[in-house]
Length: 215
Ligand SMILES: Cc1cc2nc3c(=O)[nH]c(=O)nc-3n(C[C@H](O)[C@H](O)[C@H](O)COP(=O)(O)O)c2cc1C
Image 1 (cartoon, helix red, strand yellow):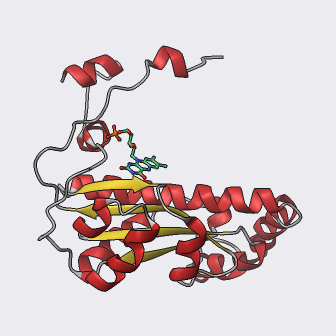
Image 2 (cartoon, rainbow, N blue to C red):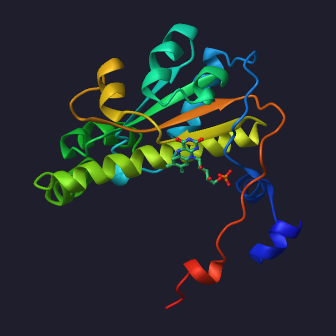
């Protein structure tokens, strides 16, 4: 309750609780595994995160076998989470590409939610926003992957699992070793698994007064 009180939130709920109680896991139970169905379920939640123009420009590579972990570990600073956690996702963002939008919106059109004529109203502004701007295309890849990873992190927490987002890896080596496409960026690694004892609670945050401008 004291942590909640310091945020000024007087009433809480399961979602806020989950956010306030998550921390980056350092110690995993190396004997605990997740089934492929459980991994799929986590990624399914991840894909419920929002993406710009509904591009869904992401891919998740689930590194969960001993052999795959052995390929990832040396190119990720030998971080113990990679060998000990049940799974480490290579969360990939794909460079924003307006050409995918008609495909990505098709289920919405087929369901009768979006009028077919509206697809162009999404595709054209996206083309103008991104396609001549490599930095914007890459920024969007990073945003997309980050939202997806965050959703998986909180889903994991809500299921009593630990998670660790990680930037400590050699992006070029991961790109090569795991066959990422030319348009794919390995945005972060995200380990998920059963925690063992010794993990820290969430670290104190900078005061809201330092980070919030009310204008
Ligand atoms: C983008 C990003 C990269 C991170 N990279 C690593 C990493 O490579 N290794 C690691 O042990 N923790 C990593 N962390 C975890 C942070 O150190 C941790 O989230 C931060 O210290 C706050 O701790 P808390 O989340 O437990 O409150 C990373 C976190 C983020 C968001």
